[in-house]
Image (tube, rainbow, N blue to C red; front, side, top):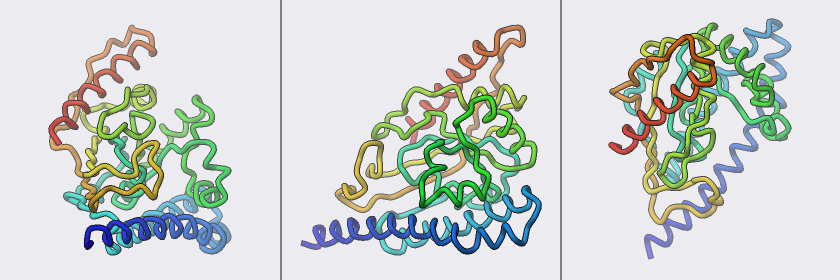
Length: 261
């Protein structure tokens, strides 16, 4: 009986959190973000302030989910996340809320978002104000990513390109490798890998929000103790071959790391 009541509570709590997320996006878009546009005339300053606002808003949202008992959260060594600067953050992607928790943990976070979200009435204002990068134009995306990293932002990328399939990593896309190569990033110092677990699985790809886990799920996130080794490519090779090689290198690394979680 208690387990059934707990399950029902988590379904209701999850629905409330989804509604709160959408409502919060609209409130920010109609109130604080327009005010910031009036106060801060410089685009770079305005975007930095908007990202800071989103960072604290997402921290509040994660705290609400935790307090309601919808999902339990454990971010290991929060200070390490707070001290990141100018990093390309690569992470596995087991659940819908991974990017929310990452932005809540990482100051000055930037990310690549799907183009259709720029038309989403709940998120459009937030995304435009923060200057998050659209994946609509691949060439423009690379330029924007390099510029963001050079400005000291932490760029969040999920190499799989979509959520994992119930714990199994998807085949890696070349986006992360292309950014690293074209921005000239030395993997040993500018790439930070983050490992995420959600046990039991919930909010996975293709699963509706109301189909919550049989028992309370626990989200855990930490910076990997063993970061990927520098990839030894060949400068004379075409960029496409270098990209394939680095993608395979990162995919093998993440498979090994996730297998040990």
